[in-house]
Image 1 (cartoon, rainbow, N blue to C red):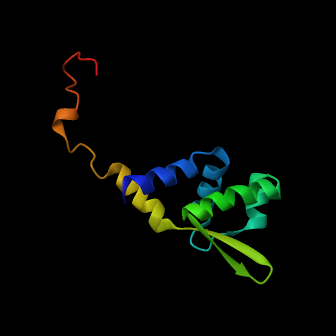
Image 2: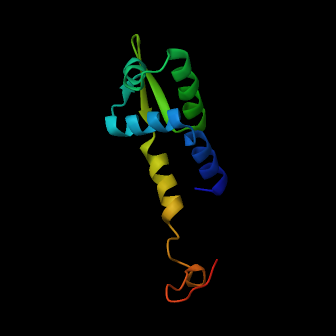
Image 3: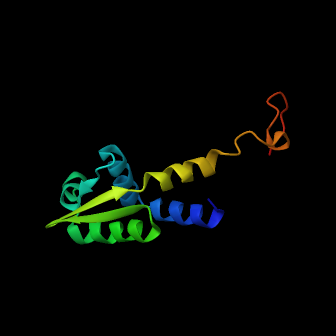
Length: 107
């Protein structure tokens, strides 16, 4: 993942409602949730939910599938996993950046 994509994902998830949606969809698993159930779980107006789902869909974090009259939202787990990996992949890899706990230096 490149830094621009990571910034886009983090920006779109940087809203309380959108982060709640992402966490709810993660808990729901691969089958996702119908829009109506998301709305009831989060207790938000349909127009507000639609706005936030649009942001997440346009960023590529979720996809929606129509099943007759039901619109089901599913998370793109691979993209969430890539984002977490991007944030942690260089953990502790640069000794010069690690603060020696025995010194009293201020960074």
